[in-house]
Image (tube, rainbow, N blue to C red; front, side, top):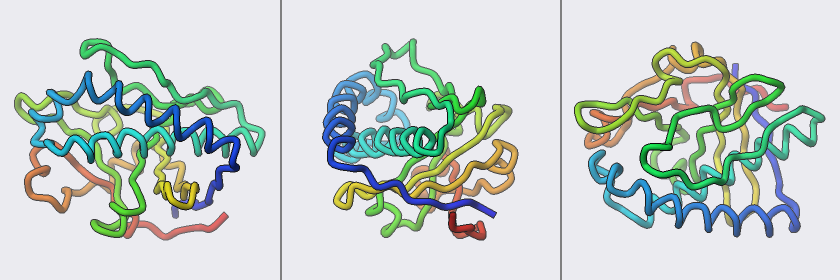
Length: 190
């Protein structure tokens, strides 16, 4: 069972978050594009949009947690050097690691609602700890920029996530990625 709720940004929140996420995405891409090229990812526009969507998803989860009265950290908007990057939790919610994975509504319509994890591979980089031995929880979002809203699914323990991982649909990503698909869950509307 996977909990589902929708977060609708108000005008003030959207004005702050969207601009900050675009700025973050541009700056972050400069520090990661070469690594992504080694992972068979070449579309700079898509990389930029993935970064924007990811941060908007984190902010939606954060705002939803605050709305419900939970103690939740803000998303990390710092740009790290190549060596300073990590797969640490995106948020800390009530003292627990919270890994947030996001997908755009356009991607969900094209490929099905799913979330991608880095699984390494020879010479391709790191492995997301959530798929191997990491603890904490995963929260999954679908971001609709045109409607300024985010569907939030979860949380799931990292063990529950690992039990449901499958290969991505795109053949070229199978060596370096693994995915969680919404279709593998029953949904509980909150």
